Amino acid sequence: MADDRLDWIFEDEAVESLESRYDTWAATYDANHDQWGWRGPDSVVEAALRLATNLDGDSLVIDAGCGTGQAGAALRKAGWPGRLIGLDFSQGMLDVAVLSGAYDELVKCSLLDISLPTDSADAVISSGVFTHGHVGGEALSELCRVTKPGGVVTVTQRMDFGAFMAPHSEALKNAGAWEDLERSDPALFHPDRDEIEHVVVSWMVLT
Image (cartoon, rainbow, N blue to C red; front, top):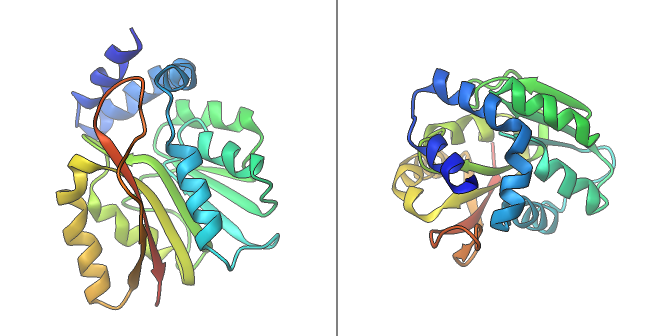
């Protein structure tokens, strides 16, 4: 059952075994999410393209936690022509993402230690990462670091994960590193699976 697969992912919070489980799931990940009506990729791309007014054909977008490449594919479908780099800790997921043809480069790394220079990207998107049992809010500092001043960071966030995000987001605001830009109304992003709502949250990087 597809539902069992997501429960199977959520029950394991050890990084090494979580990586292995995503490697295993990669082949059926897209089909399972299609079954659930997953709205994360389209939602994060819509917000990013609307808010990141600095983007053009010469810009770089980083898809942080790109998985099988659903957000990258949504970005290309929306007509964005610039450079796109996908990051993920699961090689199995990256092996599927390359088949989308959406990415100029795919990099295997943790979002807690992104192997790209400071001020690399004009925007960062992240869909389905900030949720139960995955990377914590401490990853926000790395998303901020790799984004140029004036760039936008846009992520989906499961509502029951907000308490883990807020201290890290607020610390970056208090340090003058970024400012709040937009927070969507809560909505069901897995409408055919469960009743836990998500939001799309965006910040503008200042320094």
